[in-house]
Every structure is written in structure tokens, then in C-alpha cells.
Image (cartoon, rainbow, N blue to C red; front, top):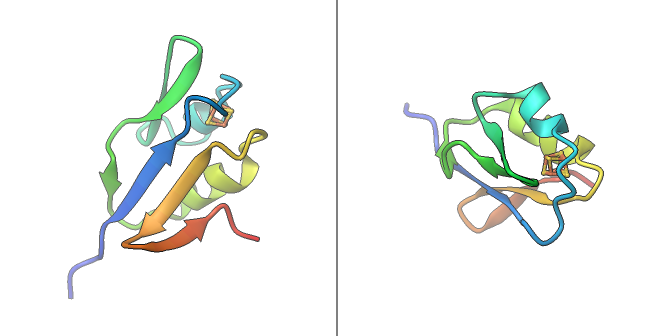
Length: 74
Ligand code: SF4
């Protein structure tokens, strides 16, 4: 069985450039100037992406599995 890809987005209008996501998972997020962006828009399932979405102080990260929003978790 192959892993279903997740999509990762960072809303540049919300991101405050804290760099927490890039510190937590530098292979998933990088800082570009004053805001972060995903290294890749589609990733294999990775709990660290959800951890980053949960810990983002601006709630700027969204992780989806198709149309289902997985993170940030409630
Ligand atoms: S943790 Fe959130 S606010 Fe901080 S750089 Fe990443 S997306 Fe931006």
C-alpha cells in the first residue's frame, strides 16, 4: 500500500516569520525572507508537518489529505 500524499500550505498573509516550522522540520519548511514556505507542496505523510501546524503561533500552516484538513488539529 502506498502512502497518500498530504498537501502543505503556508499563508504568507498570516505567517509572522518566527521560523519555528523551519526549525522543527527544515526538510519540510524554509524561511523565504520574512515568511515561511513549504519546501514541497506535496509530502508523504509526516507527523512533523502536523506538529508544525499545531505549534505555529499564527496558525498559518494548513495540512490536508485531499480535501480533508488534518492540521492544525483542534
Ligand atoms: S511557524 Fe508559522 S509563523 Fe512561524 S515561520 Fe512557520 S508558518 Fe510562519
